Image (cartoon, each protein chain N blue to C red):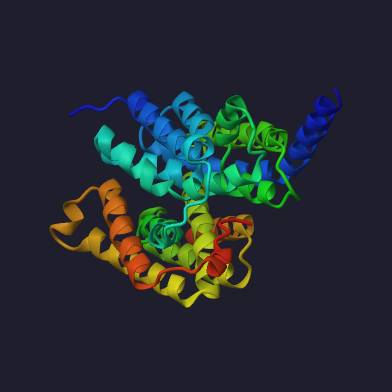
Amino acid sequence: MHHNIWIYLLVAAFTIYLIRVLPMTLIRRDIKNPFVRSFLYYVPYVTLAVMTFPAILSATGSSVSAWAGFLTGVVLAYVDGNLFRVAICSCVVVYLAELFYH
Amino acid sequence: MNETKQDRRWFLKGMKDGIPIALGYFAVAFALGIAAKKAGMNVVQAGVMSITMLASAGQYGAITVIAGGGGYLQMAVTTLIVNLRYLLMSCALSQKVDPGLGMGHRFLLSYPVTDEIFGIAMSVEGRLNPFYNYGAAAVAAPGWTAGAVLGAAAGAILPRRVENALSVALYGMFLAIIIPAAKKNKIVAFVVAFSMGCSFLFAKAPVLREISSGMQIILLTVLIAGAAAFLFPVREAEEGGDEHAS
């Protein structure tokens, strides 16, 4: 089945706007249910973990540079935690690893 | 008259606070643009996606679905799951604005609900003037979109090695969100490690690996976050660790 990218984009944009606009216009109060709150609390961590690993291992030219980038990200995120520094340093390490390993 | 003046002041303040956000966005959006290009999107599509969605993980999830050729329903569900945290943020913002705020403002204010803009808006003292968010968005959204457009355009020109290096920027950013939270909270650490383990299993194991990656994100998120919420309900005080970005 062939999919049209513009329809994909329309669906995605519509869905994400709906998530943002419903609480602002209709719900207009805090969610109190403890299960729902807990679920929403854990969702981003699970999603980001699932999207990062093992996808990162095949994102670069070799598994050596990918592992180097991944471990740099984990360690630096643990020690430093600054979003953009972690992102940039992972990139630099991947670049260097590929420079020396090929 | 006085009110217009106030609004303008808040708009300018938002623009000022939006500058560092825009700079950071630019780098990450660039990586996103490269990913969009790899998934078969052109420069215009990468730009339209960025300006309409204004979300890092959200767009990455959407790109995953496009790359995997998933259905439109899968696109809707993936987008819903990956961006579910914005639901909480919008709820919080809806408490932060004047209860009498008009619908027009509510529709506009909903557009730039992102980790960073939400973060600065919640740190405003007292009631939030929506113009503060508009100001921040007026700077951050163009930075975000320009980054993605350039990433998609440059993806083809950049040396292979630079492109490879830049592709991990996004993952680095995701790690910078989950690892500090895991450091603060043992349950989150366990949930993150367990999620990565399951994701690895789903990527490699026979049968499981036949499931498209967009579908894997949905399944694993609902199952693991659901189980975690059931086993380890969060008390409100703990949600302080819920800051997704610096």
